[in-house]
Length: 162
Image (cartoon, rainbow, N blue to C red; front, side, top):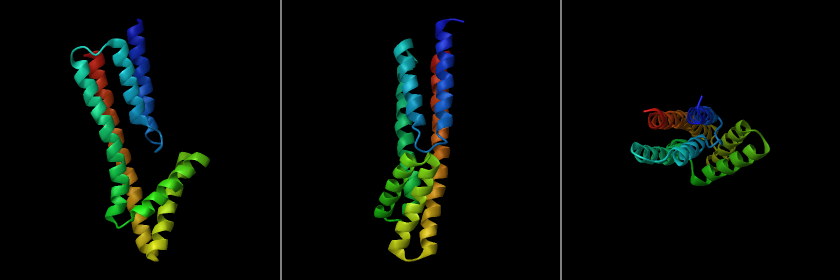
């Protein structure tokens, strides 16, 4: 087994770990995949289609980050969440992720959103509707990020093995 093939297999394995890491909301799986593709480009060179494939992968990384925020917060905003409530949810989620597991961060973010919306609206059903919308947005954001990550790896595979 030559070094180039071993490196490609190692990078593929690490990229797949990055893809699976997207299950954990605070894990920057798309960024991990992008850094590994950049590493491949530095080692193998950016000749030919490599430049264009790397550019496409870079754009997908940016889109993946934006779509994540748009789907999570956008869904809650459509149900009437306030920006202040989303900020409270973000702070609660960050603190939960630091002091608890990432799953605890998700739970605290949703709890923070519910409590902020309940305090604002004084209506449990409306606060729950906003919280549910954010949870659904998280689900769709995961699906979108996972799909984007899969395409990023596929583009890299074309670059590496075509």
